[in-house]
Length: 379
Image (cartoon, rainbow, N blue to C red; front, side, top):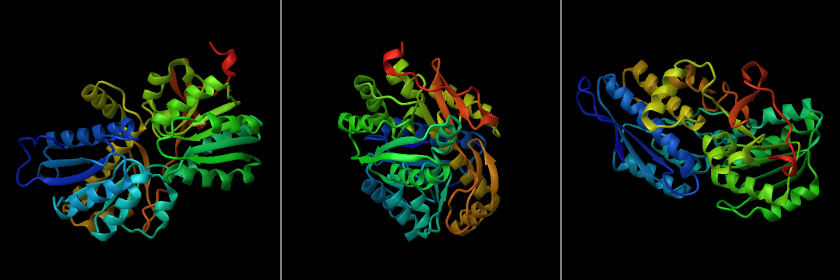
């Protein structure tokens, strides 16, 4: 699909920006928000006269949530379509292969939704991480556990780059906080039957259950937890439970479930109110953090090109390495040479009375967290 009608003020050859996104497949529900955010930024930029006075043309292909397809599509975008710039795909899984393509062609790759720590430890020099590193996603949940005097947790996650990085982060941090991971397992991509895993978790009797989930698995897992009566003082499901679609899918079963988020409409970031309004007006729904992070990624690319007044990849990269700034999404500050994000911190959210409330950290919280009632005692 190609988006973004050129405004009358913008003239000359369009600046072509290419991306692959998971428009179908396992990650499609969430990647739609990323696609929306990309389209919104391009539309607004063209309405304001374009980039370097030229219209921006967005070329998006569907990688079907498949890493190897994403890799092939970025190769095509760069060598056949000859795009001027690229933007990253959805998920660490798809980002892994395409980051190699960005290296091969020396193309700046702003990766709004690549959280896996490992991806930025490979010596790649052309990718920029926008989101909180995966190993830090559940820092808030660990802190809440400690404050509540809880000791043990179980972890399950999809067997792909992001949930594996999160598992490694939990394993490393828990002992220093006096916490113990009593169960940890990764399940194949596309799994929908979690009954065996959940029964094993139940046997371990953890104080908290953490899930390294995306949307579809988080939704299925919640229903099966209820069905099997698997509960704990805290249930925190990363990506899935932080999205508005989660509540729409599971209804009141979402109550008191926590999620790891990285941005919420209530946060006071530059241009946030305008972004939320523009997104809601255009797409008829509130943006989630995937939309905000993806929009911010494009903001950064535009700012870098504007500052350099050119499309020279080395100059754009240097600007991004040198820049510490605040976007709609929050802090952006990457390590020179690796592009690893060092400025951004996430928030923990919890569904309370049909609303997604920020519960951690305290300085931005909109509500106090609650411990989970057992399924049998819930309405």
